[in-house]
Length: 113
Length: 114
Image 1 (cartoon, helix red, strand yellow):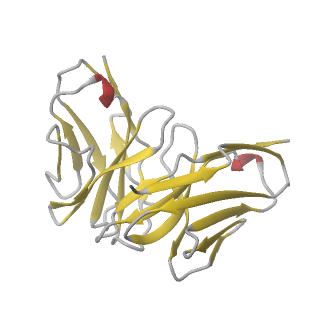
Image 2 (cartoon, rainbow over the protein chains, first blue to last red; image 1 turned 180 degrees about the horizontal axis):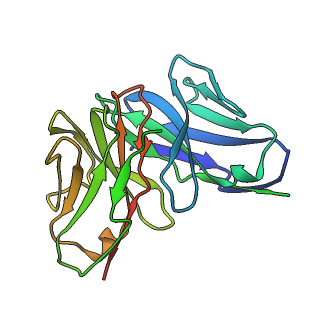
């Protein structure tokens, strides 16, 4: 069964600190892995997209890594800001057309001052 | 900046009624999607749509659901006979192409079935 597991479930950090979120997946056939940010009551917004051949992808203060052998990914957030408070969701694209996305439950990040 | 829009933002309906959720994808996008998110749970894929036909669908997308692109701009999700468990946030998304392309999500329609 296709599954995406994330840890931790929630995280509280101080503004300015760094953090790393983890994702493990079991999907077939794997197409690509994405990280999304979702604010409460809003639609997800894409942060990074990586194929199996990419190890690292950055988007500003967000850096995602992918190990296709161990089926693990991480999202590192540098110098956190209050606006980073949101749910961060690991998403894996599956299927022949690569259009079906399997979502993790997300990590809820709270950045406090 | 172009964005995906959805109407209504909130829909309340009685169990057994039909509902139509509407979406206007980004104009040059060719692929369209519906997802749902039950309160407190993860986002779930429902269906993808390309060239006026369904590309992929999940087990959730049964005969009670249908999608349509009635004109050049709208993309709709119809639920024929709503059930209590259909209560959720429904997100529409669109992308230029598929596999490697970013999907842009709309703000969602909150469906409440009473």
